[in-house]
Image 1 (spheres, rainbow, N blue to C red):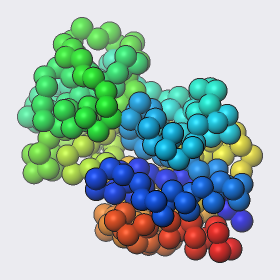
Image 2 (image 1 turned 120 degrees about the horizontal axis):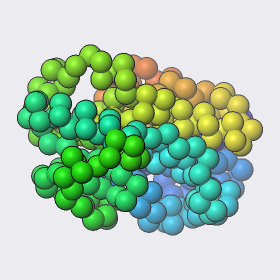
Image 3 (image 1 turned 60 degrees about the horizontal axis):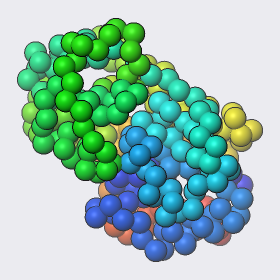
Image 4 (image 1 turned 90 degrees about the horizontal axis):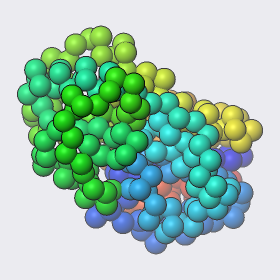
Length: 268
């Protein structure tokens, strides 16, 4: 019997037009009625998830959300932080200097929100998707000790792919590095990822690993798909994610999340 289902948002729960289908809403409502925790697990900040939590009625003291790819896990109703694992200003300075050497754009999330030294196309995309504002900030003014939730290198896919090939190997040793979309490369604390976020949450809830389903489509979902008792890749997932999953469902345009809920929760 599965007790928790962790669901990625973009490319998984959401269709291309950033909406949730009625079929998926109905399936998740029924899963909740069966006593299953429905948890959104996303790279987005909480502000970028709020309207979907409200749409799915995941706003009580019994509901939880993983934001920033698991860097922050919180109770939706009480706003209690279950875990928080972030970077520092010194990490931002290091990554900023590397981004300049590689010729790619960069932005970051501080405790005050989305910050960037220069506005670019994909920072605008980030702000629009999450309905948040952007602050133009000289990164050199940020102190080494300031909390930075995550840093992102952002650019046209071909520019970003070329930069990834030149990334110093030490970055992979020092940080969790995940590609969440063809134009977003994310840097998190080494001990921070969606899998760790799920682990912290189920420990808090007293749920076993084998009682967890995780569904995703991209590189930032790999850790939780690997960790969960049942790791599911969307039909539209990256090929390496499909290969590591226990089950491949339908695409995000074909109610792939609803299919998993019906098959493994409602019909079991």
